[in-house]
Amino acid sequence: MTDIRNIVILTGAGISAESGLRTFRADDGLWEDHPVEQVATPQGFRRDPDLVQRFYDERRAQVRAANPNAAHLALGRLDMGWKRGDLLIVTQNIDDLHERGGAARVLHMHGEALSAWCTNCDARHRWTGTLRNNPPCPSCGMASLRPDIVWFGEMPYRMERIYRAIAGCDLFVSIGTSGAVYPAAGFVQEAGRAGARTLELNLEESLGSRVFSETRLGKASEIVPAWVE
Ligand code: BJW
Image 1 (cartoon, rainbow, N blue to C red):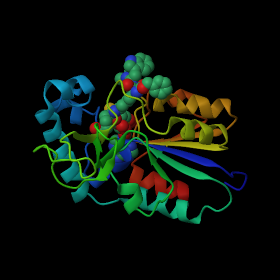
Image 2 (tube, rainbow, N blue to C red):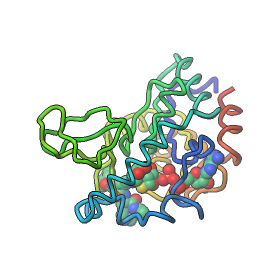
Image 3 (cartoon, rainbow, N blue to C red):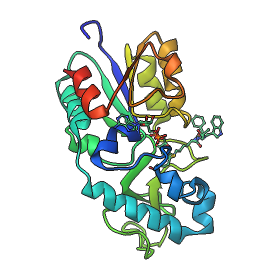
């Protein structure tokens, strides 16, 4: 990696699978038991807020019980040691395993399980317990808190910052994501257009595998440390 200065790393559910957090689209994935329109759209939340709060209460508890695996720890080491240029980890994951694995330059484009968002005053609060009993917002006192999650049809967070980082990177790495959800699935094309080398690390080929300059297949806990070291 001697010619590389600026790196953007996109991560998806596959990097946290070996920490015990389920992915979405596998046969035993989350969408098998929880229809996506019911739990991951603003319409689903309006129709049955209790169901959606229960789903994310459970996810929040699972995130708290999980620990970073060797892949998160390797990216943490890379982030701490990378002084030659910029590095940004753009994660689609709502868990905090990158941060607990030692990484600081992390951006959660689909939100965070451990955050609650007040739809009345727009404040965000670190949240570790339940949201099901309509707790009041600590800032404005209204019972308008929802999971701080980007659902289908909503705008992912920090897009401008992400596209700027991609436009300036020499290496784009995608780890453990199926490439089924946009705009994240289109980042590899953006990086390619910017002249970056593109590398996919995944258990199996994703929908966009052909677009990458290189694909390495295997478990994240093995192939990510091997790539970093
Ligand atoms: C391993 C492994 C191991 C397993 N080691 N690897 C038609 C065309 C284009 C776009 C659209 C369209 N119709 C609608 C859209 C837009 C829509 C979309 O993309 N829909 C598609 C289904 C087509 N997107 C949106 O609505 C987004 N917003 C938007 O587009 O706003 C407008 C906009 C305009 C202009 C610019 C920018 C924006 C919002 C998307 C929100 C996604 N939300 C979710 C749920 C919330 C978070 C949560 O509850 O956790 O985010 S959906 C779900 O999918 C979650 C994930 O972050 C996301 C991606 O999933 P991921 O991470 O890839 O998981 P899997 O399960 O799919 O794959 C796991 C991978 O890991 C696999 O490849 C395995 O092989 C691998 N793996 N074990 C390594 N041990």
